[in-house]
Length: 392
Image (cartoon, rainbow, N blue to C red):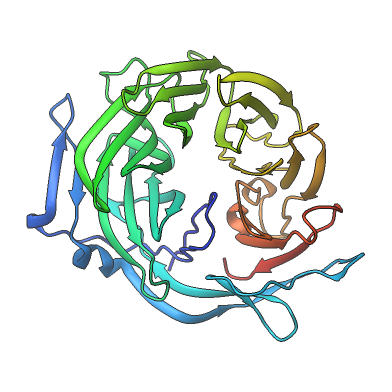
C-alpha cells in the first residue's frame, strides 16, 4: 500500500496524512463536463459528497509516534505546545500528532493524481493535484474539515490537459496556478479562476495566459492576484499581478525560476530557485524593493514554498533544508539542515515545503517524510528542536 504526503502551506490545522491509490466513483447526476477549445472534455465536475467521501478513511485514534533529537537551549528543553487541532503534548512535553483520517487520491483516466498544495480557509480545505512527468492532468477538491474527526470531500474538479501546482481562495473563488496543453494560449503557464456556489465548485471558469511553461504559486492580496511562473529556455517566467475582477495584468517582472509567492502587511515576497533567492516587493504600488540571497534550492524543476510571518520568511531551501530569513536585512536567523537518511538518495530527502502554525513549523522532506520543529522564543537563537514523525 502506497502512502503519499501533501505539502502544506500557510494553514497547518489540517493534515491529510495518507493518500492511497484507490479509484474514485462518481454519479451521473452530479457530474458535469466542460469542453475546451479542442472539443475535448477538459473539466469533470463532481459535487456528490457521498461518492467523493468514499475515499476518506477515518482513523481518529491513531497516534503518530515522534522520535529524533532534542537540543537544550538557554530556556531548557524545547518541545512543549498546548492544545492544537492536529497536535498536543504528552506528559513529558513531547509533541504528539493525531492521525485523523487517510485519504485516497483521486484518479483521472485510471491515473492516480498527486496532491501539490493545501489552502485552508474557514473550516474548508482546498487541495490541488497534478501528475509527475510528461502526463498533463490535475484537479482540485474541496474538503469540509469543520469537524476534524469527520473530514468530508464535498466537491471535485478534475482536468484533462492541465497540471495544477497551487491553489488560493478569495471571495468565493479559487485561483489555480497551472500548466496547460491547450494551444489556445501563447505559453503553457496559465492562471485559472473557478467560482464557488456555497463551497461547491462550478463550471464557471476563466483562464488567463502567463509567461513561461508552468505557474508555480498564487496568492490574493487587496483584490490583486499575484502568481509566479517558472522558466524555460524559450520563455522566462517571474511574477505577474492581475486585477481580481477583470484578470487584467497590472504588473510583470521577468526572471528565472520563480517558485512561490506570499505576503505580509507591507510586502509581497517571491522565492526563486537555483540558487534560493527572495525578492521583496512593496504592495502598493507594486515595486521591487530588495533581493536577498539566502541560498539553497539548487535542484532544478523542484517545488519550494515559503511562509511569510510578520518580519521573517520561512523558506523551504531544498538541498539546504529549511531557513528562516529576516525581511529587515536578509540575514538567516534560524535553519535546519536537509534530512540525510542512509538508505535514500539525498536528492530525494530535500525540504520542498514549509508551513507555520503558531510556534510549530511543519516541513515536507520528500521521501524522508514530514518533520515538525518548535521555534522556541521566536528564533531569538538559532537552534530548533527537531522531531521526526515516523512513517510519514
